[in-house]
Image 1: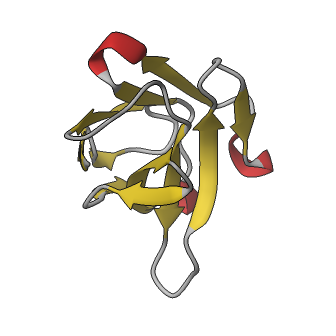
Image 2 (image 1 turned 30 degrees about the vertical axis):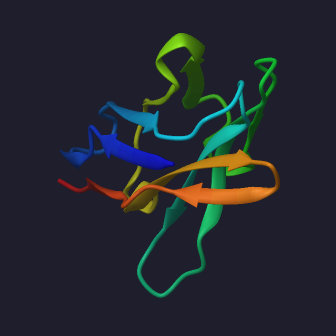
Length: 114
C-alpha cells in the first residue's frame, strides 16, 4: 500500500489549505483513513479520522476549522483546513489502516506564518 500526500505549503494565519492523499496498491475494501501531524519536538498526533462508513473524529484543537472527507472509488482522503493558526504548523501525514496494520504517507509540510 502506498499513500501520497499533496497540498501542503506556506499560508498566512487565517488562510486555508486543502490536503489530498491518494492510496494505491493492495487495498481491499474501504478502510479507515486519517490525518496526523507532527510539529518539531512534539509527538505525532491525530488531527482527523474517517471510518469506512464516513463517521468522523477530530482533535479538539481543529474542531470547527478542519473538515475530513473521502472519495471511496478513488481511495482518497482530503483535509480542508480553514482559519489556520501558527500552531497548526507541522508535517501532516496521511494514514490508512488495513487488517490492523498502519500505512503512512511521506508527509507534507504545512507552515502557517505571516
